[in-house]
Length: 125
Image 1 (tube, rainbow, N blue to C red):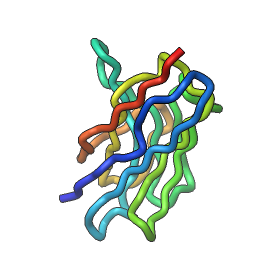
Image 2 (tube, one colour):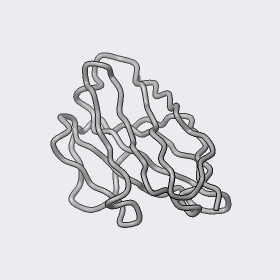
Image 3 (cartoon, one colour):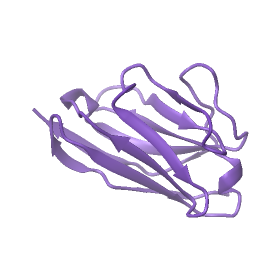
């Protein structure tokens, strides 16, 4: 069992930046692929980005390419999402996700075994 706890959400103006963190419990974190999804009001949850177990491979949704960067620190059991050039359409609850298989797909999606509870990101215009 893996527990995921997100932090770092908040209110920011358009064009600003935020860094989200996701701290994971358990000794198997370094074998899991990790990712972020988001869900805006009235919309379905959507994939944002994923990173493989080693941090060597990533896959991004087209909507965030060039603006968001995922990274991980296996020594700290933490994955990060650096979000730059934020837009009002980035407003959503952001969820951390873990995949036991460890690898990322070649297309922008991810299998999820564990979810975090989410953190709110609001971008004002």
